[in-house]
Amino acid sequence: MSGSTSLEEQIAQINHMNRLLGKLDKEMLSLSREQVRQKTDIKLEADKTEFRRVREDVVKALRAIESNTFQSLAQNSTDILQHVEGIGAALISATTNLNQAWSKHCEDERAAQQHMAYIRRLAIRKLRQQYWEQKCRLIDGEDAARDQDTNERGLQGLPLERKSQVAYNTTNLTPTPSAVNINETNSIKDPADITESPRSIEILSEIDHEISRLEADQDAVSGKLKAEQVAHARAASQIIDLQGKISLLEQTLTTTNQALQQLRDEKGPTKSGQCKRPVQSDGDLYITPSLRREGSLPNIKDQQFLEKEGYVIVGPELNELKVTAEELRKEKEEHAATVSQLVDLQEQVQLLSASTDSGDFMKCLKKLKPSKSRTYLNVQYQLDQATTALNTEKSKHTATTEQVKALEKKMQLQEPLVEVGQLVRRRFLEKSKRALVDGGVVESRSEANVKAIEAGVDAAFLGNAHADAALFALGYLDHADSKALFEELYGCPIIHPPTRALRFPKLTELFNMRATMGFCSSFTAHTLSEAQDARFKTLERECIAFLGEIRQQGNGKDEELSLTAFEWHAGVEARLQEMRAIVGHILGLENQRSHDRF
Image 1 (cartoon, rainbow, N blue to C red):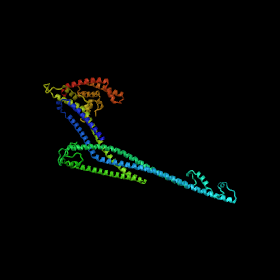
Image 2 (spheres, rainbow, N blue to C red):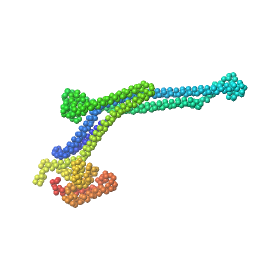
Image 3 (tube, helix red, strand yellow):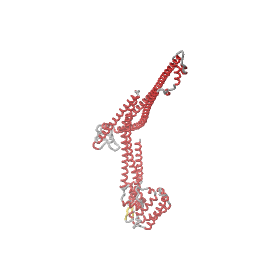
Image 4 (cartoon, one colour):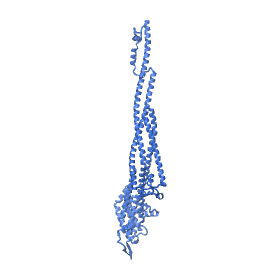
């Protein structure tokens, strides 16, 4: 889309140039056909021819850019489309399989957690039972010893202890452990409260440590799976972007096929070694069998089509086609390698889905990382190629834009020269209608246009800062003596290019009148009126003083505002009127002194 936008901008610039040239042509055609036909200003015609030649070069360059872009898209769209579709389908399949594997792993993880909790409860229950059995054995041993001592004391007639009297039974000399066990059992609340058995505490610590280790492994696996899910989600978004690019490539491919079909339809059937209707390209080159001797083929890569149609391809064209075939073969091999990698990826996912062992899952996960990296590198390579092509087109567009700007600037500089040239040449044509016979003017042809003659005289013999500055800007004058003469006549430095000061008519008129006075030899030893020269100088200094005061009031911050204020100053207009009268008087005297110059 960016390539088409740049082409549209270039076409718009060319249309703008065409409008400017059309305007120039209209101004030239406003003269009578008889006058235009007799124009002999070779320089102006050469400039106009140069304009048109450069414009045609720009148009051809734009067409070549458009044709090359169109052909390259037509050549690579099919392979890129198939390649991207294969990558997209494989990535979608891999993402689906990994999501299924992730769901199954989550279910297995929940089952493993439940199993661990069940094992832990059994271990705690078994530990409690062992503790209770050990405690009961200890209590039973103490009670048996105490009862034996009590029986001995009773047989010997000794007094019984208070604690033994509670458990003593005259009918049964055996102890009553049931009552003791019940009391001791009710006093046991949790295995954590057991301090008599260090082995029990050690067993519980080992169980807790094993449970913590299993939970840490489970968290690590969960983190890796989540990271893999994020990566596959990112790949899915890239697939969506690639699908959008695929749709654009399909549109371009359809347009290319239509253009090729139209080209074949226009060409019609041909025989081997013959060409009934030669195909014309943008560069006005014809594909005929004689191209073996005459020139080179256009940039067409379909060798089989050309050979089928009866054309012979030799020399650089055959080498170019071979290079293109080699590039296509390499791209095909890369595509086959990518497809093989995706097949391996799919097999790994299938193995992962079929396996129930967490170790297999981690192995498959490690194998998937290089495959994903290679797929990403292949896609990145395609993107880099597209970016390089885009940057090349941008560089060409920038160069074309700079060329168009240079042409527009040149046309702007030549406008005053064109105006002066057409007025001078009209005067020449009108003066040719008159003849000087016996001191009198005779109309030798048709009636002369006096206004055209006077306008030509003014254009030739009055000061014109715009036109003279353009001579230096365009390179027609570049000598030191010419620059010094310009500064002496106009009273200002050379304007290269013409500055914004020339956009202000009163300041420009002041420069032009000073140059006109200099043309009439004023301010020199050959002056026609020293008094008029002195008065003109005084008025000029006063105008310059007004401009200096305006600049001081504005502190010299904005030159644009200062020049605008100078244009509207009442004192400036009054002095310019007097200066115009002086210039008119001096021109009249100069006309009387050297009539031939006018």
